[in-house]
Length: 404
Image (cartoon, rainbow, N blue to C red; front, side, top):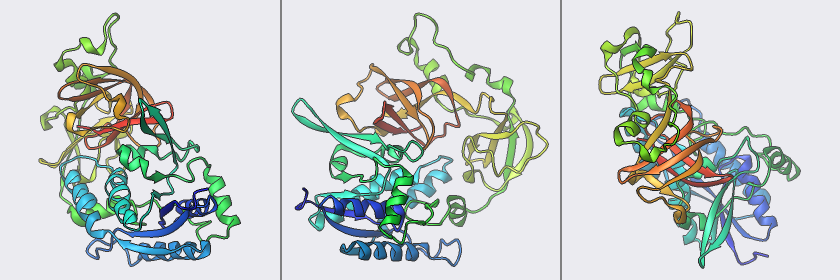
């Protein structure tokens, strides 16, 4: 039994965290529910709705039903400084940040964790669909971040920036369950959140959607859309490692040609339309271009926020849309498993993904003094600067990094 172990559960007002709290109480933990109020800036609103009030009320009702203490904590100042300001700066620079990964690293498992420890908590728990276990390696306890049991809901990617210290204090009570099982438990316990839809908005902001959120801070600005023909990018098509060679044999220029995004000039292509702001778009995006008559689907292959220009390519096979590798600067390489950290000149074979729910793809990791090259066996669509790449061994997330 864990009678003396205290856990603060991040009750979001959703079904997943509600069931997480219920399960922990059933397991004998001393459970406290805490709602994180992360946003109430009236200068950035989408409608007259106040989703955080609704979510906070639902979280409180769940705590009452489970007969556990409940409190709300206002983290909006920290959320603005660590997440929102960074997010706007990244989009303004033409990069594609992931606020959910940042929220877990900077808020839930840092600021929130410290608040929980002031309540003498041994752990914090969330409703993430992921799992954790521990190994003893040379007398040291090493915590492993594992995929959730439900393949359609695995959220380990969103936790790919956690450190060992953060993992040591984390519990994921529903990670071994399917979403349908979580709903079933919530209904059996008559929890108010049992049939509540999953939030599709920003991390802990509720119903606020990212495009609308951006438009309130980054103002519309007319710019040109150019179409880049395939023949200008022939070298970036599927890359094969010659027989008898490995990536270690390649010089810096070849690696950079494979892994770094391409720079375009307007006279390389043909102007085909206009847009309302390059900072609203990301590499790989198809919707919102509003350019017709192209035959094949049109995709964004590059953005230039300085000149406010979008570069596009026709079709899913356009070489500007698909790349065989990416680069993570040394300062942005993060190892969950520090014992597996690569040193300059070392390589390892892993599987990797660059977005949530994307199937894992085989990749070679090559560490240089300047940073980490991730070289995929198969081309990856829509690699964008600012995204996170996470690498895995089987079900375990080993590390991650911010794409240059």
